[in-house]
Length: 344
Image 1 (cartoon, helix red, strand yellow):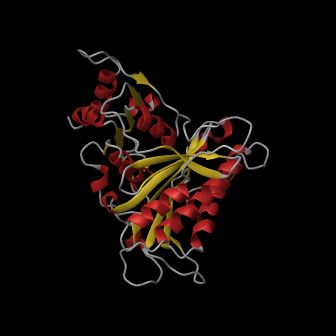
Image 2: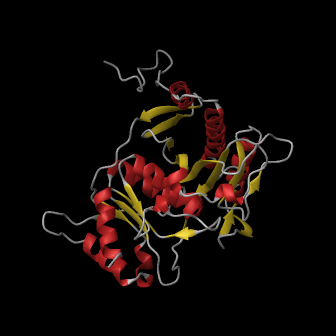
Image 3: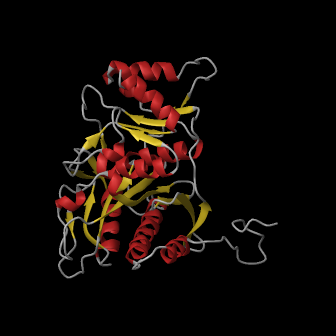
């Protein structure tokens, strides 16, 4: 029996199976009262991902590497590809009539839908290019996104109130990873599904159906270079996890330096990704709305867990558009171990 996702030879075109669009349409048919807005928004996100992937793959040839000379709202130097990715997502989505407002890690204020375009019932928030510090060394980077329903009444422009929603109110979230192959991974509350891009055909095809994270892994992912700034509980956890303990073997350190890439490995193989608070960044470093909440939604849908060390990430009510948080995310037993140390 031939796997429908595999090539069968040079004699003819390869049949890969279900595309991302077909998968979304199948979900739409099962949902009562579906209007097609959700599917339409995902089609626009898929288009944006393809455009970004195309530029990432030829960044060294397209005069799009390097810094712009600007600093974003996070105080970080802006890469040219950061701006390209941000503008690509905004332009692909704003005309569709599916969103009322957007939020981006790169932009200080909520992004309005221009007056000439209709306003929809969804709110899109995104990190356009996570791990952009890895661009110049050709390491994996990615796009992270989440979708909420608007809170404000009517069909007018969205507001900051629409953006400041907890992870528990997310209706869909996911990420695109640009690496040795490009993958679109998402959940709409019914499992986590991964789609691999075939550049010859120009489509994302279902390659990882109903992903489940192992209850425990054997790798941890954290920037040990920040150890001198960590609180005592975090240091004790980092010491404990790298040493054998009874039947538990010592964990291996795996750290790429782009959250979306480290999380993708953790999702597939188990373990834990951590970005703790420290004595300099007492509220943590990662953005709640653009990084922590979307990936926490995906992780929980795959059977995993995500915590700030005291609370589920999904329960945190944001009060600021660019609010930061500590994060421990991955296999549920590994996250529980970390919280036990961090919580004292």
